[in-house]
Image (cartoon, rainbow, N blue to C red; front, side, top):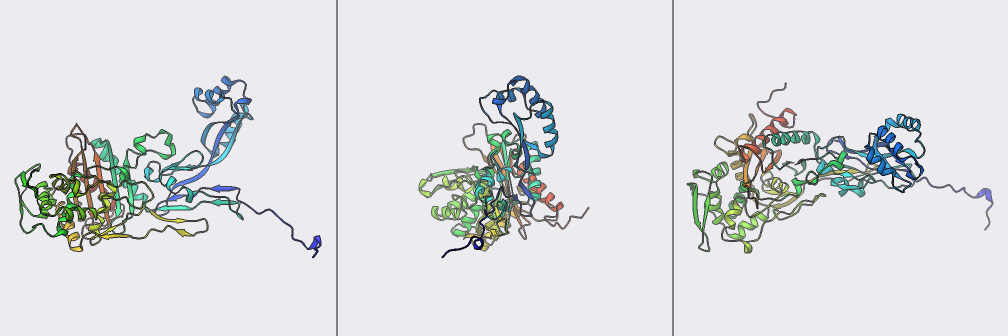
Length: 517
């Protein structure tokens, strides 16, 4: 069948996106923490520039780039060399005029492009990450969600925009946490410091600090040390903070005799099932104590006593249920920790593991394990991604409270939390976490750094607050603090107390004694 020309439809090329813009990264409240903005870059064609030295001098003065750097770029046999990136787009006219006046416009030209900008600077940098000069994510969420953040040419759209990624992070809390860590580090000069703040009811990560930090806007100035997400990836012996988990395992097993109080004289020698002697020391005698007193005064002998009354399998399985040898299902690398199985233990292992030695955990593992005590014995999965939202408003990857296992009974969880509360009262090691008008439950820790010949320690504290109706879990640790005190009780605990005060002032918590200014 034949058709006349007038009856056929005219063909037109489909509209395909000419501009592809990377999606934003935002905090839980919609505050933008990574976005793309227009920049300028100045490009040269060295093959068209004859007077290399004089041109390099002029360009150095115009661009504020060292003369030697510019001359090196102009001296290569190439038709394309970027002389400077990330120039504010508002400088286009003045920059073009200066290049023209210098007689360089042509071989040297200005190009517009979209580049990444991080409004919050170093705050949360190890979580957020950054992109390279070509817009590819190479650290943090920028890398983990690179394919989701990227925009791809789309039929029917002139501009294609990548998905926005919302984090569970609360930037207001992140600023408070960073400030507290900075103050602590200025006073005690640790090699590094970490903080994890979680929602006690959902496991959502509200703040993560790894100090020293870096500014992703100038990532080329960062060091390897500052790039490391220590709060997720660093493993170390946690020390006495771990006693709360050992206590929970022993209480849950039900074979240790908690009806008989333990008398701490400062040193005690135990005889193990294999008839070998283990001597455990404390930094001072604690007298006659029950399990609450063990947590409050941080007694090594008492927790060893109850651990030795618990079978190897029950003790190990009880700790394993806290996921101390497991990576979490979050988009950033997090180390699995290290807790060896009983067949690899020495005659001392069970005693020393009970107070946080001969095993390793990450800050994230320690903080998240405390969700057991705030959720009636249930361990929660930590959450970092709140949701992703497409250009069309379609929501994906939405966070939901995820229960991993019933680690201990609700009764055991309640007992441990009450013992932690005792540690913040008079005579307790964590009293410096306490805040007027608000109940806190906490456990301190001071652990000698593995393979250290200097006696260096990791000073830490884990806290739950408010203790009577938990909303937050926070863990702070400082590695190798300097000065007259090295105890977690004197370094990390006051930092937590200051953080809680700041959170009350910011309206993130209510205190019975807080009055509005």
